[in-house]
Image (cartoon, rainbow, N blue to C red; front, side):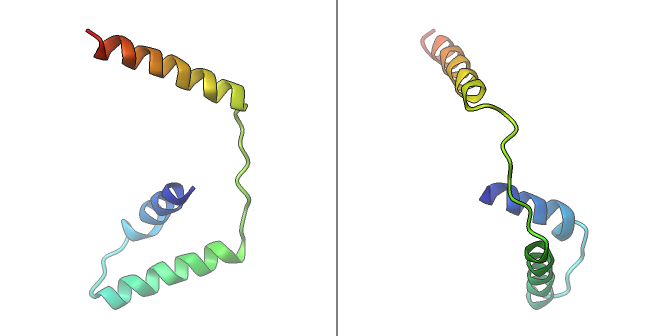
Length: 69
């Protein structure tokens, strides 16, 4: 979730701006956080845990197959 938050702030605010100073960048980050916190939305998983675990199992099997050769 932390990585997702930083991805969002980077994509939605930091990449769109040009900042003349670190102070200006900090102000933009603080503003984004204030707006984000003013209207929080809880994260809701949309995939069942069993589906995620099955995908991990398939990925591990594929990785083991390729690394054992």
